[in-house]
Amino acid sequence: MPHFLDTNILLYAISPHPKEAEKRSLADALLNQDDGALSVQVLQEFYVQATRPSRTGRLPHDIAVGLMRAWTRFPVQETTMSLLEASLEIEAEHGFSYWDSAIIAAARALGCRRLYSEDLSHGREVVGVTIINPFR
Image (cartoon, rainbow, N blue to C red):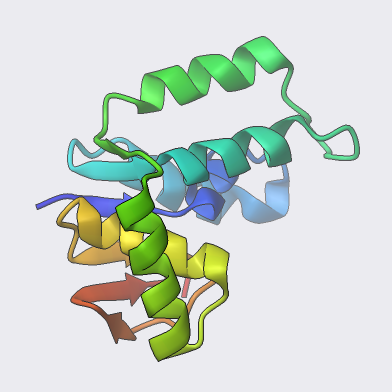
């Protein structure tokens, strides 16, 4: 069963900061497993954050796109109307932001039981998906 990777996992994997070396190592370990899963939203967020001009260690367009293409070896949930509707339901029922709800909905749509994220509530189960902060 695949595990879903949130944007922060991808960003830590490219972090040049010495203080984030342990997080980079954990992120790399998750990305080196064969059972990862992503969404178009996660890939979009990665690109925007990895290439933003104010980012220390900013990636050039071609490097960021190359990484994104490499990560499409994992299943990638597309943005669809049914995903939008599921996201809105999660937001209404569980109080997450729309964007966080869309991450949870994408994980569920791909059959993931685990969602690795630093930004959500560690240990919380939402619609059958358990949120895990691997950096705790």
